[in-house]
Image (cartoon, rainbow, N blue to C red; front, side, top):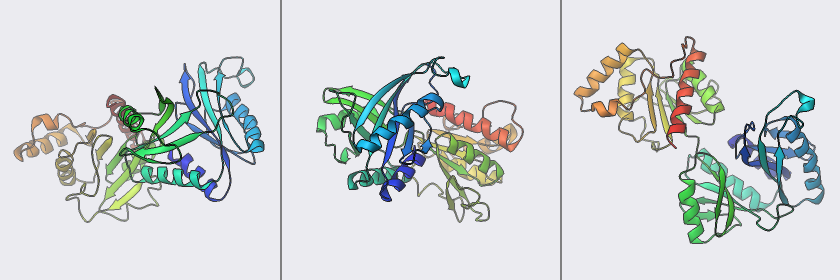
Length: 347
């Protein structure tokens, strides 16, 4: 989500309106999930994808009407059957419901999406709410706000009851979705639902893991004590921190539900030190790279330091799903697959 929001914010800041297509819901095997966004620019080119093919082409055509009228929003349903994809040798199957809207470069829109980007960048809890029209599915005016700590930012202002209800429901959501309550129908998009991955160790495996994790929606944070390894050039997809040492390495972060820790430094002593600190957090996932013999040596030591067997049983070690991985790229696939599985199970 963040990449498209950054592009949207950039366009609005430059005074360029866009038409935004957002998947509200899907049934069957539609290729993209709720919350997926695509931007159509005034010259016709697109940013992002809602699945490709016939639907995207049709949305590009519909976008021209929005640029002509310079207002409004509508909800459209598409059936993805063999007839729709006949000319592309592609059968997907299912239905998808899209929200299409014209977004002018107004101060309200710029401010709203700027706030959302700040939340995404700072890993803040909160969510964006879009109220959908109950009277008409075509040519209505979109209203939305951002809710964080039950405080509202944006044109849309909701009652305390609605804010409380939406906050409760959003806290249970891993992905965007529709919520129907007495005050209306709302599309809720949590700012942080894919989790933050903390990679301890900026070696080659760290790069491969960061790249894949970023591609699957994790916010990636990399920590290492070597600036030559931990830098933006090697990790353009991540937030990078160079530490003096690994003592108290989590102090600057808020580690809790939705936090994933992967320990893969260059030495047993570093891994042991970091793992001991990680076990003091409320992270959703803690994993450590290494062999079974390394695991036993580190676990035996930590047990002498007051760490309980129950705590150690929560650690994923050796890390990664068992898929016969050998190369750094393959091992990264096994690790990120396990992270995705843990993310799914944590909902």
